[in-house]
Amino acid sequence: MERDKVYALVVPTYENIECAPSVLPQKKYCDITGLNAKYTDPKTGLRYHNAEIYQFIRTLGVPNVQAYLGSRNAAVVLK
Image 1 (cartoon, helix red, strand yellow):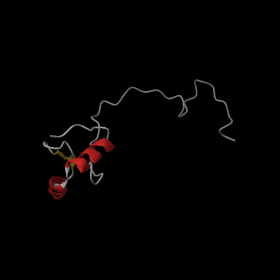
Image 2 (cartoon, rainbow, N blue to C red):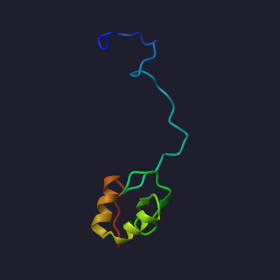
Image 3 (cartoon, one colour):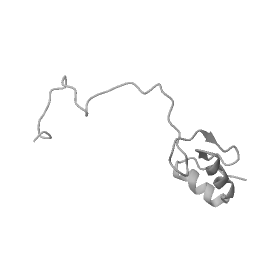
Image 4 (tube, rainbow, N blue to C red):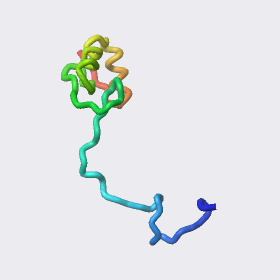
C-alpha cells in the first residue's frame, strides 16, 4: 500500500534524496578475507589485512593473483 502512494516532490523519500559525494576516503578491503586492508603488497598489488595473509599471498601463482585482482576490477599484467 505504501508503494502505491504518490508523494509530492517536497516530501523527502529514499527515491528523491540528493546529496553531495562523500569527502571521506574510500574504504579498502583485503582481497583474500574481506576484512579492512591496512597494507598493499608492492609486488602484486593485492591488499591484505595482516602478516599471515601476506605469507599466503607470497605462495600464490600469477593466475591466482590475476583472479583476485580481476574480482575488484584492478587486473594488471604482472611480469
